Length: 251
Image (tube, rainbow, N blue to C red):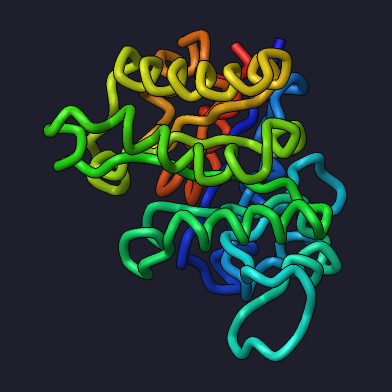
């Protein structure tokens, strides 16, 4: 039985004051004991969030890391070892906004995945298709290629301490959500792809759904057999809404 994970991606949001308020709200929420919970604040607020959640079981991750694991001359970037030193436990790699808006290639994402793991962080590998690709019937091929970019180089063993996240680009920040059946089809295909390399690891790897998940649809989505939690965007900025999603994952 895979333990659910609900992860809140705060993206480029928050001031010290609003983050402090959100932390107080999170600590007041009743979070289920059988669900792992993580939040991914902006880089500026990682230390504040780690300190603020030090007496909780909510893990803290970063939204990105450099392609180089170690520190060095790479102005403006943050190495995975620095994130680990700061107290992060996870890091997002390959989020669609970075792929589409910042031009990150599959190779760049794979290098970040490897850097994160080498530093002792759990990478959350994000994959997903655009609306045009879905309408062209290319969803499964696009997602398989993004997974293969890591799986074929790093091997199935690399997924033991990693997480996969399916985020249909057309459902991020649009209010649109994949139906449970649409999401399940992709999640099942991703698990089958990993199973071709190692069935035991495929059975254990957690695959999250990310695409306008909210309290109103979380239970229905996470009732699907291959959806193991959520990568939550906007709804994670509201403590009550995020707490409700976490409770839905444990129901």
